[in-house]
Length: 197
Image 1 (spheres, one colour):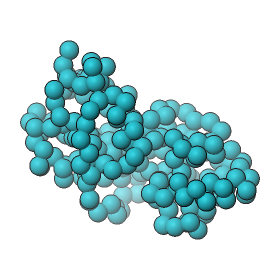
Image 2 (cartoon, rainbow, N blue to C red):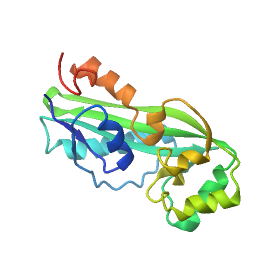
Image 3 (cartoon, one colour):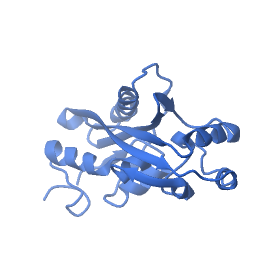
């Protein structure tokens, strides 16, 4: 059974992956400020940097890394700095559609394998009230979350519809990741969680 490393300390990503396999968390501490304007290139570049920085110490493992960003009208919306910034972000997203892009990388140095791609989903927020917005902000669930919310928690109550992969919105497009693992490394999470048939 191959060791899987998740190069992320995101609780959402951990919760997605633990449904399918055993893995070890080894968070990456790369500097995330990049100049790319294209959100797809940016998330893929960051995910690759996270994965490659961990892979050097885990050459026999399969490293999975990811980076998620929110985009609305060409503006990359990252993690809020504080309560006021979270208010600004959510107020901007209120009643509108935005896209979630997750760049992901799979690296196995033992197989000389490095793969990077991205997945896109669309989220529409309902026109929530000021009272609902304040109640959500007061939960402080927005901390450390791209777009200042998480769909897997109270943030799901702010959403009216989604289009695309739900897990991608959480931050780990597991369907696409499993597809790549199976195609190139003969690993499929449908087979008792991890490993070959």
